[in-house]
Length: 113
Length: 112
Image (cartoon, rainbow over all chains, first blue to last red; front, top):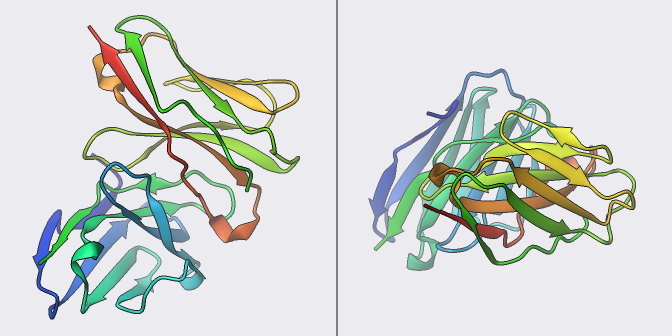
């Protein structure tokens, strides 16, 4: 079990669909992260939220839209994705954005058809 | 953040110590060495981090050379459940707003 909960565990969507990935933590952490991981590759950083504000966007295409409604929740809104966006999407949190270790969820396995 | 170099894969016999090396020859003074691992179908798991002194956690020990250009993660008594990809990451203290950038990692296989 992890302290970072991601839903859904699996998602299949068409290229014209709109869907959202959700991430929740109740550890009082003030930084939250989205990573993308393709098969047999390391996780790649997408976004960092620090104190509920977007602090880092690693040049991610606009079809991925992050949202941090409050300090415990992180969403990733998906629209008009491509098949190559199929991957494991990992959420993480840390006590602060600069130094503390990251705690990861087990990810959402996304398939775009 | 400094780049790290790790062997692509390693094997270890169950019950023996697993020693995972990492080179970070361009590490600078304010950069820490972090280790994470990722068991198949799970998210990465934090193991340990250090600056220049040796560190020990419940799971592992971290040995950093005096010149800080390399380090070794030691799992003292490896079990089958330690089979995973192990990532060595150099991360600057409070720089770059929290970036944690993964390299290729070492795939450790613990065999009976």
